[in-house]
Image (cartoon, rainbow, N blue to C red):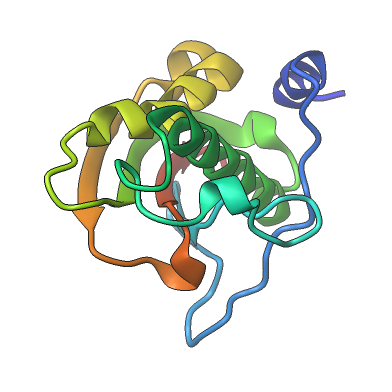
Length: 157
């Protein structure tokens, strides 16, 4: 078993089937030694959004539920990476995460919500998971999702 997948198993996390694109884009692109993964929603293994992960953070979604949604997005990022690479141990570094938080007006705890994804990536990848990050509050997200997260990984070819 790969080291990263062993870590996921130890955490009780199994990667779902990656979500297919719903518009005119691809789920990932590999260019040279960079893997870019399109934004992932917090879809569960059944392909649906948990009701706790829909709505506006700071409104009908608590910080804790927002963090759980961001963590779920990170799990889905790794599912896409597995589909792209076949072996998650080919990830040599998480370069960047970009988070979009469906935020109620005046909600400023965006970084706390995004920590759900960042903390998970670091937990799974260790020092290779430490990354640059952007976190942006938005008015709406697809399917009324509370969070969407995209990623850029450096990979071994």
